[in-house]
Image (tube, rainbow, N blue to C red; front, top):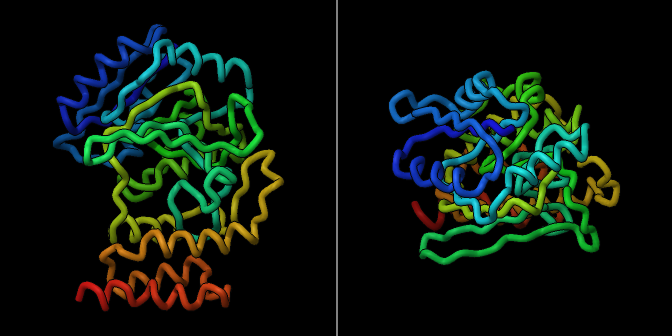
Length: 291
């Protein structure tokens, strides 16, 4: 039914999620837990190995610091793929737009562009439900062009046809790249009937910025991408919003001036006079604040 691939680096997390999967999935499954504590291989290589070893038609690539909150989620995953034979991959968080500039999986615009249902456990022990979808659109699947790698399910044939790109940075952008490539040939969607709690928060630092710029140089296309059926989105508007959003989001990162300058150039911010003052503040924030 479903093969589950986990790249494991903490035995206690793997044990917890293994018991949780057994108690909640509701269908026959294969667990492929690949120990990466010593080898320290990149996620793309580990996930490609898992796809090769998978025995079932659906392969779930997931982090080990997760908890499924609802019973029989495996049945609903199978239903999604049976309901749409052109569907290649699903996730619980993704975006309807990917800028041509560097970015994470999410786009500026909140619910206009981002789709997700995820309970996030914060460092202080509190939970926060992130629930985003386009207003007035209650479809069970929202078409997107990027996915968050915390949990991605794909048809095995798709994962073998379009394997994860092992030339990418070891632990970043594998999810965005995979979803973008799959979305050129198949449907990619966020689903809202698989409840998950994620026990760690994303970490954005200078290494993440460097990886984002490196991925930008490796991207197979240098133009913005819009999800299937998202004709309501304005690419020009979202490009400018995206450049603004990421400079504001990353402004407090302890990154050197040269890296910040690379980001400004790659983002296209200099093409928008309204963003020049923000770009200047983005360039100077770290050198003045932390040196």
